[in-house]
Amino acid sequence: MAEIGIDLSTQSSRSLANVGGEFDVVVTMGCGDECPWLPARCREDWALPDPRHLSDDDYRAARDAIAVRVQALQASL
Image 1 (cartoon, rainbow, N blue to C red):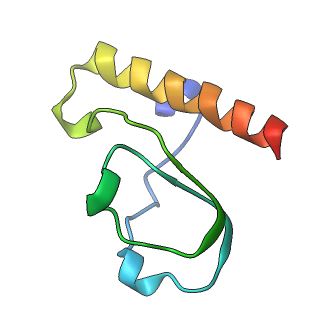
Image 2 (image 1 turned 45 degrees about the horizontal axis):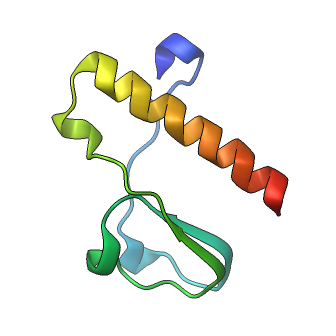
Image 3 (image 1 turned 120 degrees about the vertical axis):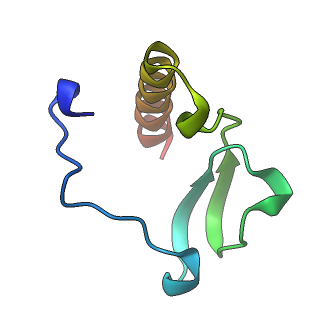
């Protein structure tokens, strides 16, 4: 991510058990029925491969695909 100017060094994952509230949009990424349910007005599942098992080039392709989908989602809201 640093190669596109995003510093993740201070970021960490949080459990969805610690996320509360209702959301406008929830996007899951390929976990289907295994994803925890979160209340949302709009739900989408983007069937993407787990990046931890990808080569560097495949990781970049997934990252770029997410960016395109986020831009399209933003335009549709």
